[in-house]
Image (cartoon, rainbow, N blue to C red; front, side, top):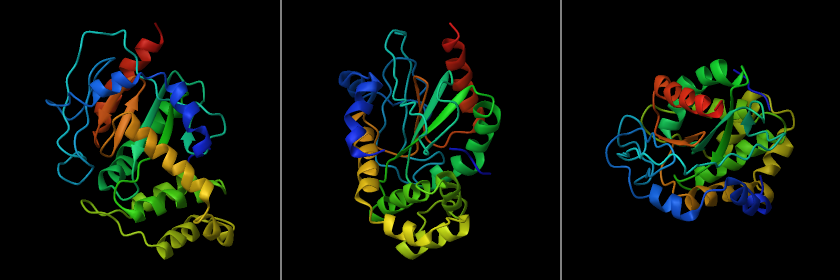
Length: 257
C-alpha cells in the first residue's frame, strides 16, 4: 500500500516546537514499571532498555502507570508541510510520532499489521497525521538503512521503501541490510534514478537528518523501538491495533474540547 507524501540544522527548532520541558521527560524516563503500553496522559512514563526482541511486543520489558495531573502536555509533533516522512493532513487533530529502526522486528510488525489500519481508519479520514523518526539502534546497518529510506524519499518513495524493508523482516531477528541489499530494495520499489539513490547513500545531509532524529529521541528519553507518542500519550512497543484505537480516540476526544 503506497502512502503519500530533516536535516541537522532543523534539530534545535524541532526541539523548541516540541514544548516538552527536559524535566518532564526525565520523569518519563523514570516510571514504566507495570504495563507494556504506557498510557500516560500528561505524566510520568518511562522506557527501559535498548530495543531488542526480548518480549512479544518489542523493546525490553517496558512498563508504566498513570497520573491524575492532566496539565502537563507532551507534544513532539513537527507538522512540517511537505515532509516526505510524514503521512496525513498537517492540521489533523492528532499526530502520532513513531521512533523506529529498520532492523527492529517489532517495528516491522507495526508496519505490516497495525499501521495500514491506522492509515485507513484515521489518516485517510483526516483525523490523524503520522510522523516518522529514525532511531537506528541496531548498528551501522540500521544507520545505513535510515539514510537509504531518506534517499528513496528524495525521489518520492520514502514510504514504499519503508514498507518494502519491513515486509522482508524476519519475525524475531534483525534483518541483514548490507549496501547491496539497500540498492535492491530501491530497484524493487521503482526508485527511478538508481545512480542518484546510490550516491545519496553517502549524502551527509541525509545522515545529518537521521542523526538529528536520533538525538531528539535520546533527548526525550527514548531507548528502545518502537516507541510512539500518540497526541500527548506515549505508547511502548508493537501493541495491537485495538490498543492504538483506545489511545487515539482518547486524544481525539481531548482535541475536541
